[in-house]
Amino acid sequence: MGTWTGDPSILSYVESRLRRGIYRGIGEFHLAVGEAGSAVVRGFVQLATRHGIFLHAHTDDVAVEELLRLDPKVRVLWAHAGMSAGADTVGRLLDRYPNLSVELALRSDVAPGGQLDPAWRSLFLRHPERFMVGTDTWVTSQWDRLPDIQAGIRGWLRQLPREVAEQFAFKNAARLTGKHY
Image 1 (cartoon, rainbow, N blue to C red):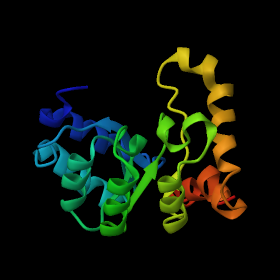
Image 2: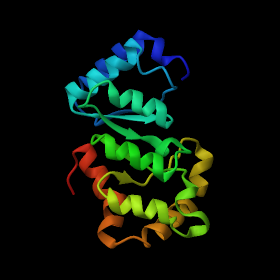
Image 3: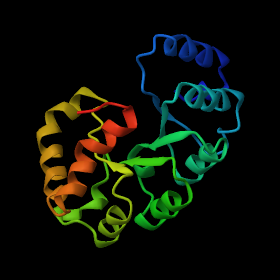
């Protein structure tokens, strides 16, 4: 997981998988600051743009911006909004990069204590087409918590206008993946 950006065999493996024509994105992958310039990451960007798919990057705000700068056509889904980036930082990046979308798995600061944070709410209303919820059930122990995770998400989604909540809950993901409901 920590060395993939320097392993060219990863790029050829992903390229062979993409030939199946069933994938809508590449990731979730971890990316550290300074790694976006590697030949492997640049190759991922080329693959994503050529195949019309998105990259799902688990990274901080600096590295996601490095990734976005590689090609103005690359579509990036920013995992967890960087885990710790505040609404101001996320907003700045969304304002600057039209191909950036954000998923909010594991972000308890969006609605601390179940109450939607005013800064996040303002950002959500400014960019309703760019956010989606997530659950990040990356380990099976998360599955036991899934009902509580979903209840928390539903609680703060109800604090948004219905059309915005629906975009976050499923419409934005459907659009990103090219699926129609």
